[in-house]
Amino acid sequence: MALPAVLLLLAMLLAGSAAGVTQLRLEEAARAGARALARGEDAAAVDVIVRRLAGNTAAAAVASDGGWLSVTVSGRVPGAVGSLLPWTLSARAWVRGESSGPSAAVRVPEVWHHQLQVLAA
Image 1 (cartoon, one colour):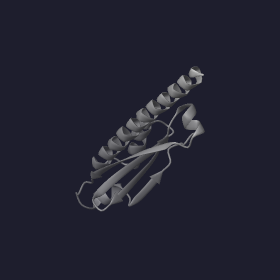
Image 2: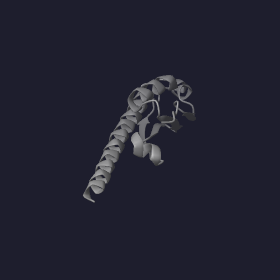
Image 3: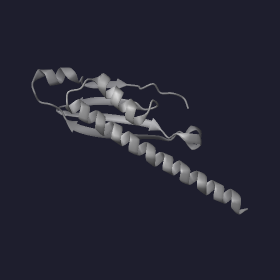
């Protein structure tokens, strides 16, 4: 009777730790993408950064609101629990954009959304 309860508790702990690690990866990818936008990098460079840090199953959205740029990265929790439950996590990072004239507005469009190869697990 105790063995199934212990196994269920272990599965829940493993799923929680996988979610925690995934959230940390998404947050780091969003921050790095926002820093790249602030440096004047283009959307392709942000894609490369987000893929490298958050994995190929992540989705990124970049938006510009006035002088602020945001990068939102979302992804599903990996593992058995993540494939059984629709458990999607996301992280957003904001950064002040460059204000060096019209070239800054050309680099980042008002709203840009790009799906990064969402793969079925």
